[in-house]
Image (cartoon, rainbow, N blue to C red; front, side):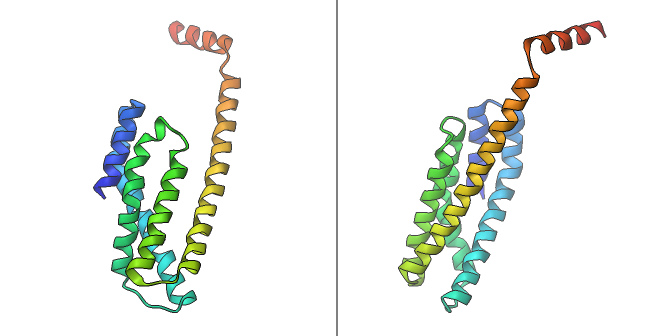
Length: 159
């Protein structure tokens, strides 16, 4: 999962945050492994129960990991281009769709619908998180007026 670590560190470097660099080294690989594992299980059981085909879970894990590599590296641009997350998820979905067809000879339509559904769920979650983050930023901006910052500065200097 070095790609996750590299992506996390580069993203933090672009954001110019030392704490984010440390977090990128530690949490990005863990998050990458968990995400690839969850998607492996989702696709494995979908293929097993819906398409009634048995495939190697190790090969599926490798395919999902390789499909996510470009998006993990492109994610470093997240601080510069906020919508790159959507492009990364779309790229990973497309690579996964192609890989499942070519490596496991799975039918195009059901795999395409399933990857599209997962991408749609990702979009819904992403938009809901984006709106919550914007709302929280507005609330913080409403609380931090120039007068309140002056009062805070006086209290700090007075101690």
